[in-house]
Image (cartoon, rainbow, N blue to C red):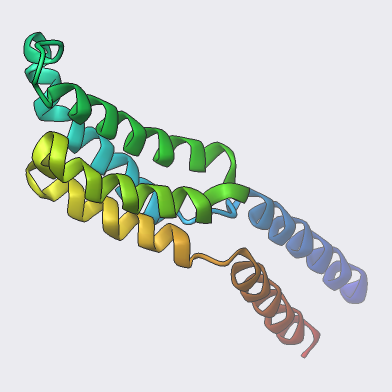
Length: 145
């Protein structure tokens, strides 16, 4: 009976491990959060100056454009993790360009966007999945002993 109970415990542990593995998302959370936050910060000033946005010769519209693109890069990355590296490159470029239109979200938005974009670009899905497999192998070895 002790052996059957041990087998039952292992299958329960394996099921809970697989559920936790499915729940873990395969995306760079920190980079996407920073990129989205940078979009909000960059949009802050141009949206308060929206009444000037369409005056000829004003750059407030470009601030809205660049802030919206930063925000879009962060949000799209959550839904399509396959394109996160490309979105990270776009996020860095748009962050640099936001210096022209919105003073880079008072420079804070630009810096957050650059860091978030770099984190997204440097992320590698294969390294994350291998890490989880190694942890499961160590857990199986502990259960077997």
